[in-house]
Image 1: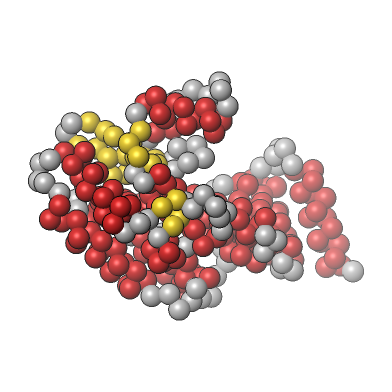
Image 2: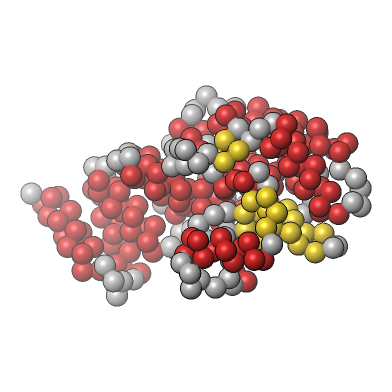
Length: 278
């Protein structure tokens, strides 16, 4: 495993060794952002979310059910504070940086959902993230049942028919809504999804150093994912870290010798090894 060399990575590495339920999701997201923004104060932005929750405390009726709580949260976040989904610059990495989401009040589905969840958690509400394919959502549960919400669209309430329509729009007309699509997901899965977004955004910009940083943290969270181990090795190669690339690609082939791309990876590994003998 790569030894972390900066404060944000060291703190993130320590945090994700905890049990999933013990991870502070907001702080972990801020530590992801701190690698690109070293001056970021995690405590400052945690206090900013605390302040949003404090504004809500007097507006939620005890025992009023999830609809009462959702109405109050939506009113504060979207009507009064003006948070919104960034449709114009969806693929901007800034939309994955929680401090910038809080500062600019725009984000993508997963970062706005994290904000929603973190505000709700401070109010002792049962709001969980939902890893819906292609569009992260939240679910709020109480004694009256479960409701699904879309923080990217100002906390819109989604019925089952809305979820089915959204899935068909994202995956095609034959897509079927499955229980796994609307099941709650844990903190490590949420952090992994944020990092997958960053990975794609940076890769398409040709920023391979930051792409590598995203993949390194995905591997920290998911050390047994073959594709991420392979991608880390390939990115080490792209960024001139030949020995690290060789180690990862060997490990990938040792663990998954029959992978569909094994022949291509073996060829690339041979080229890297030949460079060392030249």
